Every structure is written in C-alpha cells, then in structure tokens.
Length: 524
Image 1 (spheres, rainbow, N blue to C red):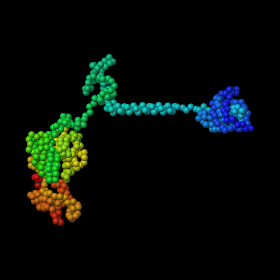
Image 2 (spheres, helix red, strand yellow; image 1 turned 90 degrees about the vertical axis):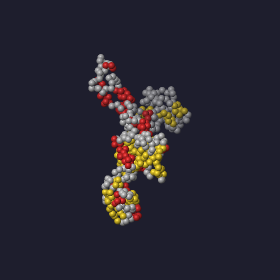
Image 3 (spheres, rainbow, N blue to C red; image 1 turned 180 degrees about the vertical axis):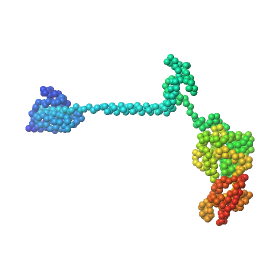
Image 4 (cartoon, rainbow, N blue to C red; image 1 turned 60 degrees about the vertical axis):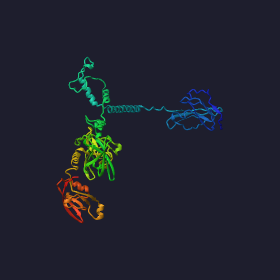
C-alpha cells in the first residue's frame, strides 16, 4: 500500500537512543523529495561507522549525513523498505545507509558515509625553493649595494687594501694600544700627508675623501695655470674691439674690428668693407670715427682701416701655431649689429687647419664651437690669456652650417696685415692682369661656344696685356689643362710665383690660340 508523507514537519525523536552496536549519528544534510510510496516496516537503526547528529527535516525527505564531506558530491540514492545498503563510490570512499520507516511518525533510518583519511602533501620542496630564492635575493642586494657605493664614493678597494697594509706596516704601537702622538711612519712612505694615524673603517675614510674632493669647472679644464678668468679676459680685450659699419651703393653692412695700434690702425674682414663708399668706426666708449681703407685682400678676406685717433688700446696678438684642440676660444664682437654690441661667447678650439673653399679660394682656418653670427666678422678670437689668436669670419661660418665658427689664424694673417699697412696690397702675389666671368654649360650650348672664362677687362701694362689677350676671349685652359671657371684659373695661377710664365689656351672667333703670359705682382 502507498503511504504519503505528510507535508507538515516530521522530526526525528530527540530522545531516540542508538542501538547497542550503533555509534553516535553523524551530521545530517536534508534533501527535499516530493513523496515516497513504499510498504515498509520499521527496523532498528543500522550500525554506522561515524557518529551522526540529529537533525530535523520536513516530511517527504531523507537525511544524508556526508553529502559534501572532503569536497566530494554524492549521487542520489534509492531505498527499499527495510533493507540496508553499502557501496563504494568512484573515489574509493565507502558509505552505508539503512532502511527507513513509513509509520505514522515518519521516522526513518540514516546512512553514514566514511571518507578515507587524505594523505598530507609534503612541503619540503617549497621550503627548499624559498631558501634558495632568499639566498639569491640577499646576494643581488649585496652586489648592488657595493656597486652603488663604489660608484658614488669612487673607492678603489685594491688601493684601500694596499693602504691598509701600508698603514699596518708603518704604524708602531706600544703596550698593545696606538698612541696618536707616538705613531712612527715607515721610511718608504715619505709621501704620506700626515704623521697622524687614523685607525677606523676604510669606507668612512673613502666617503670623507670623496666629499672633500674638488672638481674643476669647465673654465678650469680648458684654461692653463696662470690664465685669466672670463671676466678678466673681457675687461682686457673689450676696449680693443670696435664696431665697423660700411655704406655701399646697394645698402650697408656692419661688422667688428680689432685695434692694431694706438694711433688708429684697425683690422677687419675684407667682405665687411667690400665696395664701400664710406666707413665708420664706433669704439667701446661709443665714440664714432670716419675710417679710411688702407688696403684689402679678398683672397685672405683681410682689410686694414685707419682712423684719426691717439691713445687707443691696442689688442695683444698671440701665436696660433701653438694652439691645441680643447683650449679656450673666446669670441667678442657685435653679432647681428650694434644692438648686441660687445657680446662675448665662450667655447673651445674644436679643430685646427681646416681647409675650406670659400668663394673659390682655399682657406686654412681654426674651428670653434663658440657662437658666431653675422656681425662678428672681423672680430677677435682670443685665448685664455686675452691674446688674439684668430680673426672671426662669419661669412665662412654661415656657409658651413649653424654651430660651427671659423677664424683666420693670426699667424697667417700677420704677413698680409703688414703688407697692407705698408704697401696697401699683398706683395708677392702673382697676377695675370684680367677680370672675367664664367661661361656656364647652358650659355655655351645656346651660343655654340666652349665653356671657360670670358675676358671682360684687360689691365693695361699687365702680363695679359703684353701677351695680346683681348676682351671677349674665352680662356679654356692653362698649360693645356682644361678649366671652366675663374676659380680654377686662379688656383692654378697661385701655384706660380711672380715672374713665372704660363700658357693660356684661348678660344677666339671660332679658332684656338695659345698665348704666353708672364705673371706680374698685384699692386692694388
């Protein structure tokens, strides 16, 4: 017959005692069911392997005492009235359960699940790995700390060890203690700085030495002993620096000049006063003078001016041939015009004997990283003693990019300066006696003529005039060496001396002729 469990609460009798061979009941888990239909009898409680605790469940449910023990989930089980069951699940765990009673009080028996005791995993491997990691961490921290200390303090441990051994050999103590007043230095340690011995931590000595060490400034590094400070250099040189302004038919130009003599001879660059109709000088006291051009040499870019003045401060000239890369190079002048009159920039000698081609002329120059701008041309480059070692040429600097400054070595300039002051020109310079212009490849193609130098003017009495060179002749070679530009013609000519003879290969009215020309001295 079918008995339905009442939906009202059915509780296990709290006073029910376990059978003689039973153990205390295990904790229970309640699982809800719709209904149970069975014909059952009420047997005694089945012996369980684990004690169980009493629990209350609703009608129509059964009690599972170990459904989630040890992390395993149990599958639902079916019961037959009055029978006991036991089995093993797939995990190797055993469980048992008994019959249930369908009497009016709804009491039923329980099943008890017994799990095997899990094996404890050993922690020896983790402990060993932890110890190794700890040792490595300590080692890394130690090495890093020592390296950082050496880098910051500059300590040389080999030197410290040798010093320690030297101190141990040189210090004599009496009665097992060291008296600072009785320290005896070894005779081989004559270079010791003091007769006092200090016994202590070598690292403390190193830190003290590092903190007391004095590092040279950039100014000290690039100047020699006995040289001037930058302020002293400026005070010495600036009274000898002037401003130069020139007026031409097409406009005006400004630059810088150097006072050569107390009576008014002034040195500047030739391109500053090129084609000038008037020239003015402004000194450091802002006095203005009219200047006369004594002589200029475009080949070396040097010109000499003269003003009517006395008692001027002449610049001290140095020797450029003694320069070394890395020495101080100070530039004083008027960059960008008179608005920045008397500016000073500081750098070093970046290079020597730089051969550069400027306007078809090869020039040997000093390179510097001191700031050079338009308006500095003709001004001085001075050394750490305030001596002029070069003449700034901003024209050259602007041709080779920013950050590069160039100066004409004073040793190369002095012979030219002396000739210009005495003669108005540079003596010993060979001259052909012509002026001309280049015939480009396009002009040559258009007119059906060869490339070369077309003669525009022949100086009367010159070697070219005597040889029969005429205007509109096209010079295509020198000594059978082909040329296409005036610069090439000038460079070949400069390889010869005054009085030498060269052969000009000339194209004239569709024919070629060779003329022998004696080189004469340039006199103006």
